[in-house]
Image 1: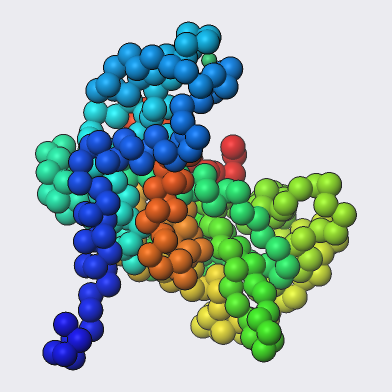
Image 2 (image 1 turned 90 degrees about the horizontal axis):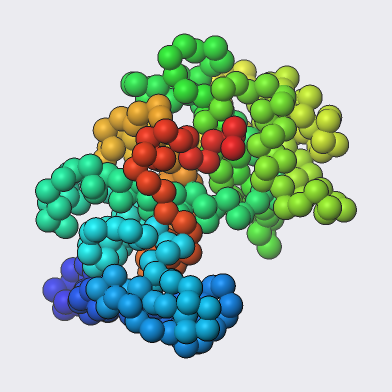
Length: 330
Ligand SMILES: [Zn+2]
């Protein structure tokens, strides 16, 4: 490979590694078993170690001590699925390693699943796992915060009060490396009804570590100086760095990190997802942030996402259609 001067295709290589690790349903179930019960079966009710295997096919166990029935997939996004785990794992691999997100049509073909809706729902369950994982991470230090509008055209027109577009507030923690160069830390994005002080305050509080912390971790905000931010920073007792925008184009220079996340989201929504409905905008934003937050993880990213999927509760299609996952009202 090296002699031809062509660079190896790492994405292709990691796919080969995937295929080596997961060749059958058995391989997937074994992975799940070891991940859930590293020290062998453990009853979640009584910690009993002995069990009867009630159903091999459904991986249903019964605790010998308390008769509790435990499904291997309970407490994971795979619970009650009728789709083979191998197909799930393939989808998770694609979602983890893709730079921009996967096309559902393409995945349906690749996984040989005829029903588009099945794959669409699976992808949303994976997005829920992404959102749940990121909800554990909080913002710290200097927080850069900005807002943008997402609408049918995704033109990203700046300005407040634009109609028929969804307001999205993006917050990124910023830290300085040894050379004093600014680096972006964690990013979060929220669909919001408005950008008033209460909403901004809610976002910052939600992303805080804990109220008992003596020193507030969020000690400074950088924004474009919109009045809400001034009120919030005053209320929370944090420093507010105001980046004065004379020209909207300057936002790229003055608020570089939020701008990058917004640009990523707009590129993704214009690409594989071909426009995102209002209802599911939050889920797609969570996916964009998840990816941004793990941009340096390299090959680990697949196993980490698989682990996230195996450690969060699933959501039904009905819930998916009626809920706005991760939104501020929660
Ligand atoms: Zn038990």
